Length: 365
Image 1 (cartoon, rainbow, N blue to C red):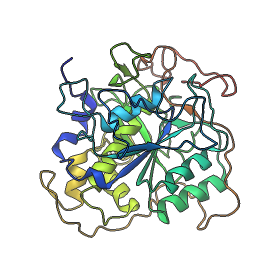
Image 2 (cartoon, rainbow, N blue to C red; image 1 turned 60 degrees about the vertical axis):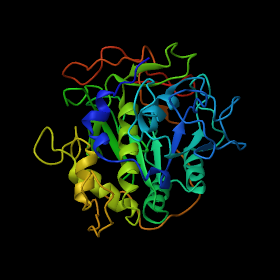
Image 3 (cartoon, rainbow, N blue to C red; image 1 turned 120 degrees about the horizontal axis):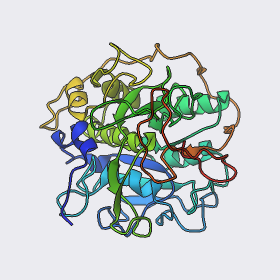
């Protein structure tokens, strides 16, 4: 199989930014696991590691993905390039550090034996720089909000999550709709926001999320690859680009990296920030330029202004309180039925939907 560059990688201009420094960054993927045997993903245990403690979703370890969702996300972030195999990820040299926290079991149901916050704290304990969460659901919790605020501002970790696939009229999805988490909308190959992509005042940025080709375990797709759709597929573009850009500017804070991604995004839809695209379409090269360096070199870090995100609802308090809990278990934000979401009609709903209660199985709205 010859290697191809998925359209999303080209849309966000990832290949214009060298990945020579990415070994200094770590992305934590909170999902269904990781196919350690996939030929287009690193199997180097000095590069990819995972949580195997008592809370992990089983019965298989983090290094086995019975469902495929986490492996698909990982491929967009870090599929190996230049190996004449499959696809290319945002970071393609196989050196980006990955940490896998398996919260969904092999059947795709929630299997983590504690709260989502506890899973995210394992990413913190693993010294991740970026936490990628292609999942969502539940409702607002002040304790969760405080915890994510601490992780961004005190632990200096960038939080990225799927906006949700409920279309125009869906309620807020969490954790994406917390102020301290980047909420990612999905676009197609023509830069149109997907009909299924949730639209609200918490959306921060848009990235490709319709028919995204990426890695899958062979027991899910015989070829090892398939095109899936959802805000789940948009999210790893942002997580991967954040790590890529940050690897050149390691003295920058997570807040500054977030600002660079949002301010440099290409404005789409209504002028200025809007509820469909957020600040606009993700661009790795423009984020590099915003931080003061050409995307073709490894620049020295320069100062950048802080960001307050004052345009978002004021939901977070200044200091963490209490014990972190999650109000309900999340679901993954991609299509369960056939992994091919079609852009829906004018009401924002897609033409097929499976939206089952979490207690029964994962809903892919």
